[in-house]
Length: 214
Image (cartoon, rainbow, N blue to C red):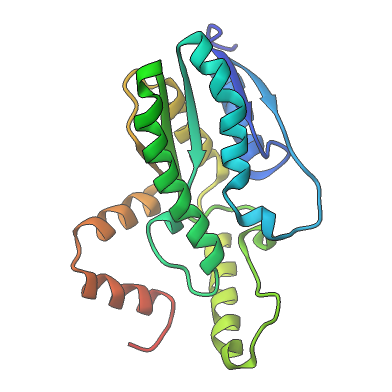
């Protein structure tokens, strides 16, 4: 049985994967959930942050009027670290990190908090976790193929989407929310390593992890 009603939650990308499980988890936690999705041919719009900004701009007037609300933006460990052959995707997640932290300061006076959830590699559709160049260069063919193989292996061994959904619920219900919520052991470890290791040491670890020569 659901807990007492906590309010309304709007979940984007709720037709499958993390979005679907998150919508179900929020409903179970007592929220009245509205989910949105889109079914279009994949394009560069799928890896930009403009959709995030548009949704935020749409809901902020309502939140300001009711003097409260919480916006939870989906980041990634790729908002903290580089990702060879997925530079555009990683750059959008880095952008969401800066956008969210800045916006949180702007709207906090209206009783609104803006926070980040940072999933690690999660068991969703492999193709949805892969971005390809429009005009691949033969120079990078071997490295690109190796990275795609590694991504496939990482996704197969990744976290269950429920790990992310549970983290979203925790971020949504916290009385005094944190700015960032790593989702899963891998994300927590990467966050700690990035924060405390010297740059050169972290760089070597990243190259080894991605099977690049030192």
